[in-house]
Image 1 (tube, rainbow, N blue to C red):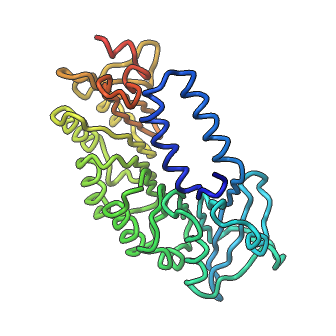
Image 2: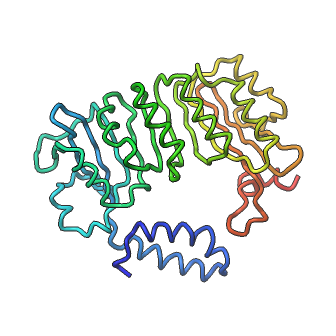
Image 3: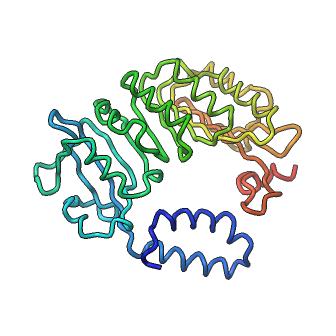
Length: 311
């Protein structure tokens, strides 16, 4: 069993957790989970990749996830590549790389970077490019990899093409974070993803000119008339007092007991609730639907708001 590639075990674990184990008694499920998890972790080595663009190419450094220590790329050659996972790719123009050549290597060609990332199941890791200076590296990665999570700083047309491509084509994408002054055109793929219920979590940073109370009202209206609609959104921006007061008085918005920041909207015809947390710097929305009829998973509404589940 030690020879089983870990990307395969990852996917088996996902299914065991949500489907298979739910059909077993608790004692057997616990033993099964423990055994599989132990196998899963036995030989695993996890790393982060930090990239910085230079005039000569892409400067790369590897960090051990467990220790945070820098790892010489040559040391990876002796490991079984099936047991290596690169958790995240970070692109920082201002990252302070060490001068020691044994730990920092220069990638002169696009192919070397692609080969490095393709040594594992590339759909499971995240891409973080939240500072300026990432365009050259984005150009390398464009249409070559699927990321489970992308946080991207806007730097022009390529940034928009990159994120639009992933929203529309990436089946593994679960979280998108948009930083900086994105243009209004980015809202077209974002809206399509939200209203087609593609289950991508969005975090919006500094997009006051694109998202306002009317957009949140539209989300709630869509939820009211579309059974099964779900999602989670985090709007990280400055809301003035007038906007907050307007948001608090959206139809059906109810303040939770003993709280000044937590509200909810309860659906009139089905067991579904929109949870809302708001303050002057952010608004977070999460839809919780009753799923008691699905034996494969726990009911999120019952877990998060049991007092609203049986009303």
